[in-house]
Amino acid sequence: MDAAALDSLHTTVLWAAFAVAVAFGFISQRTHFCTMGALSDAFNFGDLNRLRMWVMAIGVAAIGFHALVWLGWIDAGAALYTGPRVMWLSAVVGGLLFGFGMVLASGCGGKTLVRIGAGSLRALVVFVVMGVAAFMTLRGLFGVWRVNTVDRAVLEFDGAATLAGWMDRAAGGDAGTLAAVALGLALIGWALASRDFRTGNNLLAGAGIGLCIVAMWWVSGRLGFVAEHPETLEAVYLGSTTGRMESLSFSAPMATTLDWLMFYSDRAKVLTFGVVTVVGVVVGSAVCALWERSFRWEGLNGTRDTALHLVGGVCMGAGGVTALGCTVGQGLSGLSTLSLMSAVAVAAIVAGAWLGFRFQMWLLERE
Image 1 (cartoon, rainbow, N blue to C red):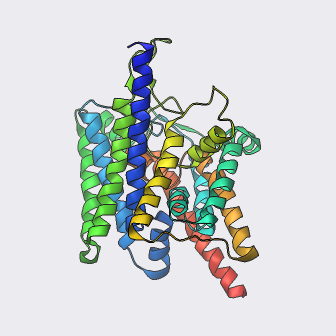
Image 2 (cartoon, helix red, strand yellow; image 1 turned 135 degrees about the horizontal axis):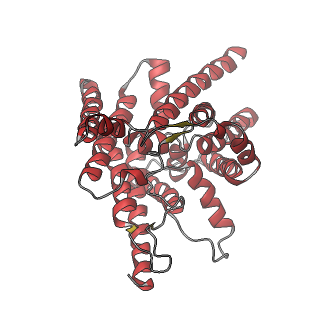
Image 3 (cartoon, rainbow, N blue to C red; image 1 turned 30 degrees about the vertical axis):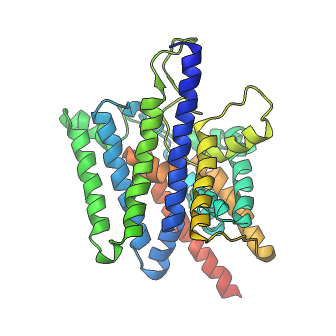
């Protein structure tokens, strides 16, 4: 492949990633898909419908990811979440921070982008603060603290720290794929077991969001994979920020989006998956909001509301990078690989959200 063909393929990959992100934003806005909202409904009202959306999406994404691996279209070992090293303390601390922050900020990173598309200036403030905090945790002051503390706590496994990896090593053959499909079907079955859940919007959210994750794995790991770069002669995943196969995630990509916008004239700054997916989600949400005539400008409500959203944005940016993903990065993309670290991070996010809800109740009781 010559340089011209490589550039053309790179552009195609970015457009494909943008299209998937637009679909994700449209579906999220249309169905009110929101992890924080799902946990709020479950904890505060006992309503599991939005939680079933999330669980069904995980099931669909897990089956899709392992189907792509079984077909030989992608390499499971090339994903960020499937290595043998588990930074368990980073997952716990980062997850707690992220979960707590998303409650204060009225939604996770993905929901923040969806709300921007629907006219929320409050979400735009959260986006900027979250992006700055994420960048500080990647390369700045928070990053130094992260590397010198929580990132040092690591568990090493003999092979991929995933359910499929363990099953393959224990039983061989297609045991890992079969286990992943069985678990995915069980998650989908639990979601569909409720008659109240089986509505058009709920099914669209569960199936559509899960398929968006699968589609992004295919775009990154199949369409964007070049076995031999014409200059370096090494394998490369076009558009990737990490140099590995990627799916949807929004904490670090918010940082790279701000970086790209601020240093646009620097030729070293190129468009990546992260930037185009952040923009794509906003565009998809805006298209849906305008089509439904639900687009509304929304601002912050007073000093306390502003303070809570600022603190929430900082917690989400720092926590999402520390945990190597947010409720979409670890909660959907990561869990689709059945990664142990993703499971730990998601459990910590849920615990952090519960603490956030308790904190909000404490504030209300003080009044």
